[in-house]
Image (cartoon, rainbow, N blue to C red; front, side, top):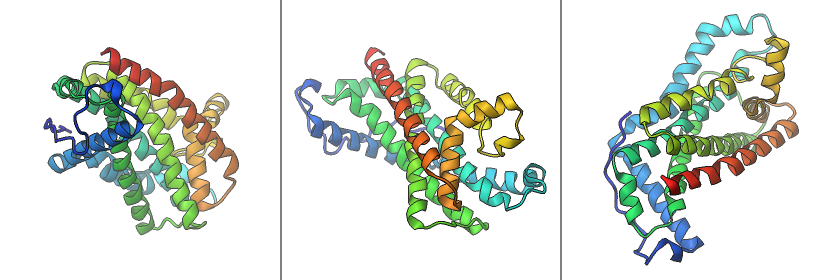
Length: 275
């Protein structure tokens, strides 16, 4: 994945005397302009869609047709109905890693120096990155949902619950993207950012109900998995799509997501100002 280094004109962000004069409307306009600039990078590097659109489909086929029989065994029901919501959550976790990586690349190739010379709010740079990444993630989630329907997954609730499942995953993805942004602003090497971004997510991905039921885990791991926010968002998404209790998992997902953002957003903005 090699992002382009061109800086597209920031449409809609007229020159201002300084960041101190940026009001809320200016920050929103500048954030959207920078998000548009980041989205335009996809034209030059469509490979950025691989991790959010293509890879989830490949993982689905591998887990469903290679490992599915061994994982699911003789349990009642269809592993397809269990797996697909988990793959949707895995998709957002993979995609959120790119936020930190792309910020590190922008620092590495001097794009951030150009941004700092512009009379725009510094928070707009980070917000524009997050908005662009969440737009890419939304595209991936919708593509994944249609792919799931094509291979036999069935939404057993209704359209509104399906929309709620996608929005809930986006909320959790936004929280993870802010954590990724903090990592990308703290570590200078883009390659190291990628490695760290993958390592810290391992226990949250595989110590959860994303791919296997927590009932198959030893007691200590099961306790961790059931408190894991990835389990909460996976169960919420699964129950919103396939039926089941939603109040507890949805509330837990919202609380975890807001809590992570309360922690990561100020840290990321602080790191950006100091770097």
